[in-house]
Image (cartoon, rainbow, N blue to C red):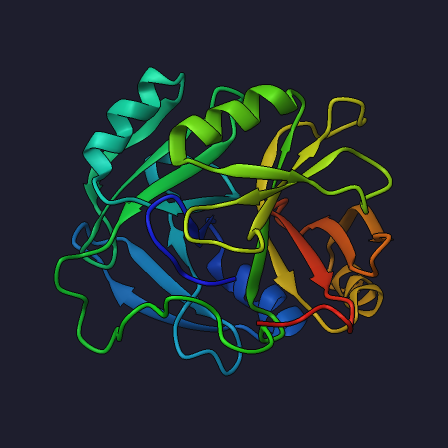
Length: 271
């Protein structure tokens, strides 16, 4: 999953009251490392990195901002957070946290889409923090194990969600007929070539209907699922393999935070 321009999902954030439990679970399962950084409002923010990655891929708030409970949200890059928030409100989104300073010195806002699914918009700081480096234009080579490689939005109203994100961030879609158990569309974000996420139709599913979750790379999904279960996770769906050999599963961690695991088929180019 490459970091690209406005309209691209570039980050994820975990909200939790127990960061140690989150660190213990994902550190054991996916080999993540963590770095706590100061914030202007005095709360604790922890950067999350995959093993061997040059840059972090997500962050963790403690306590959760705005009194939000345990959960995870995706962050979409913005060229102008305030303008995007006004536009998103016109499209039916609800503001959860008004635009304000982000932990990295940029600007961000948290919203919910018309289906009630949380997401954020994030504007990079004019001057990156010392030591932060620069965002790569795209991922190079095979994605690292444990890294953010995809995102998934589950929606009970697929057409409404497709329209919202197309109007909000100029996403386009390709129907993925290789997924056998549900209707699935790969989401093509601006500047992307292959898709970096997907929208899944959950209208006929039992239980969970609407969500947005990060999807992490692992070499062996069934083995990782078995490990996750031993660590206290619950499997919601899968493991399942697509017609072209990609294997995935959707889980919740011991605190109820939703995530997905996937492994690419060997024949798919990893660039």
